[in-house]
Image (tube, rainbow, N blue to C red; front, side, top):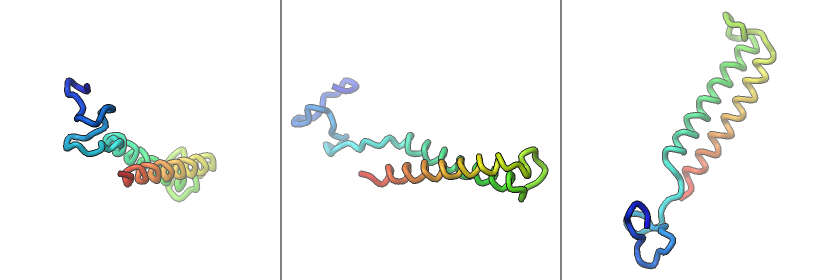
Length: 92
C-alpha cells in the first residue's frame, strides 16, 4: 500500500504505474538537476580554462596555469555528468 492506495492485482511489489503499466524508475527532477549541474560545470570549466590561459584578462585568474588545469578538469567532469544524465533520460 503506497499513500493509502493498494497496488493493482498481480502486482505485489507495487511497481505498476497509474495506468497499470510498469512505472519508470527515473526521477524527472533528478534528471533536470544532473543536466543543469553538468551544463554549469561545462560552462564554468570553459571560462576558467580560457582565463587561466590568458585569453580573458581583468581577473586574478588571468594567466594563472592552476586555473587552466582546474577549468579543464571541471569541464571534463561536467561533460561526464551530462553524458550520464542524457544516457539515463533515454532509458525507458
